Length: 269
Picture 1 (spheres, rainbow, N blue to C red):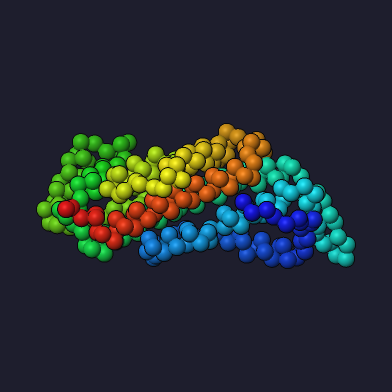
Picture 2: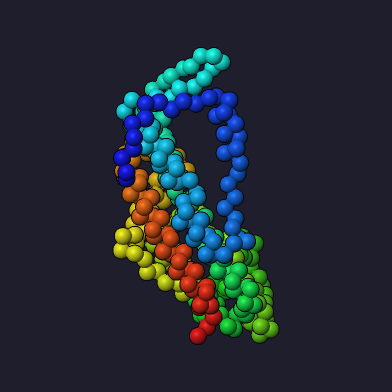
């Protein structure tokens, strides 16, 4: 990471800060269903999901002697950065990076499903892996608590009838059910289930760092670790390395999904 220039203090006008917070507190809409996979990759590459900006901000706070200075009327108050705050902000990085990964992978497959729908693909023309997904998803939507033998029999009749009638097959991205458990292995398995290539650049190391990101994200989400406990174990350099490897891995996967879609490889050969 390039060496940062010395930064003696961060000067914050409280009124300006409050205005910025109001702007930043708008919900981030990750639903990119109106966009192509190519668009999703472009946005991912440009780093518009704020991760690099967040790391640069952390690098400023992590420098010795950095202080926060806030205006209160005509006076200014200056405070040193509390080490506990820095630990909490480092821990928050895991939430930001994991959310970026899951949202991007989900939207990549959503775009693939939309490409299939645009082609009016029926069950008969789908490649075998996708036919299996179509069947499994329909079965999984039945609730075991309220389903019985008749429920499954009726489902089987409906699926057979749709196949015979050449009804357009639809896959739903919600059926992927990542639910906070997305790591390199899960992404590769999802790709294989769709017939998508899992080849990535050697420097991505197969998404190895993503497993740690997932674990720390779940520790924080479920109370297994406090933010301070999580953040104290990692240096800024380690966070940057996690971001670089994870982003490269996900970008490669999205490129594979894009190629799969453009070649219409979802059709049976």
